[in-house]
Amino acid sequence: MTPEIQELLADLEREGYVAEPAIATAVFLAREMRKPLLVEGDAGVGKTELAKVLARLLGVELIRLQCYEGLDVQTALYEWDYPRQLLRLRMAEGQGQDPREVESRIFSRDCLVERPLLQAITRKDRAPVLLIDEIDRADDGFEAFLLELLSDFQVTIPELGTIRAEHPPHVVLTSNRTRELGDALRRRCLYLYIEHPDLEKEVRIIRTRWPDARPRLAREVGRFLQALRARELVKPPGVAETLDWTQALLRLRQESLEAAVVTQTLGCLLKDRADLQTVTPTEVSALVAQAREAS
Image 1 (cartoon, rainbow, N blue to C red):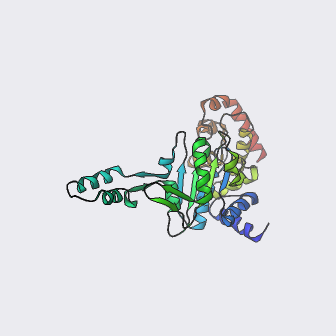
Image 2: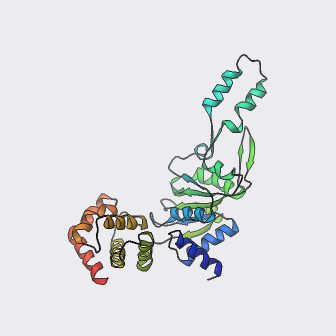
Image 3: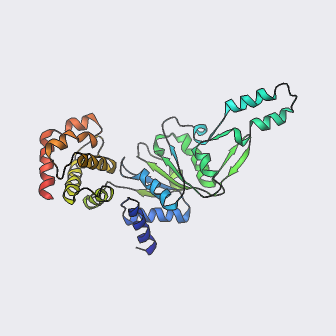
């Protein structure tokens, strides 16, 4: 492991993000090579948080585009401020202004409403971090549009011409793999897959984020989560759920797992009705006993 990767690992942990060398290496290379980083993994493993931490480490703005089904280019890129345009048209009425001058005033930059993708390439001071979150939720057409943007970091607005990035952003794309992404998009990116953490990493994450948690509680929580994820669940709990549950246990002044409290707080971990019905109180008691015995 190079000194640069060791330093980045330490920086990430100081920001509360516990990572292994593979994650730090991917972030380092994406930053140095100025290539987009595509991060895949189950929900809640820390994909979005990685982009947030990167922005804090670089001391730059984080611009986030949350993808969803039906997202179109206009919504992600820009819109015209129609009320302002209409106001300018009314002010020009009866003044005998040249139509070309009126048009240039209506379709000017101050009538343009920048959406996340355009914001990311128009920053004048420093390159921001552009987070394109859950790209797998957008459709193939939007993904195809991103190919040009990520290749040249420029967009063409018919009324204004081509806008090029003075400082191309650091780009992080995340995917929960609800659909397969195209090969063309993958080729333009460096790739990172984040797994659910093993026991030791999960305990470190808990202790880093919630230092008030006693070592025994942190290890019991970690062991319980490891056993829970081994079951067939619709939505296995991620790190985000681990941290929420740990906070809940601390608020309830728990120093060790108790079956009754775990049963009452399962909603912090399991976010699907079928999963809640699957993990019965009897099974919770067995999992708690296993976690406490091992700790």
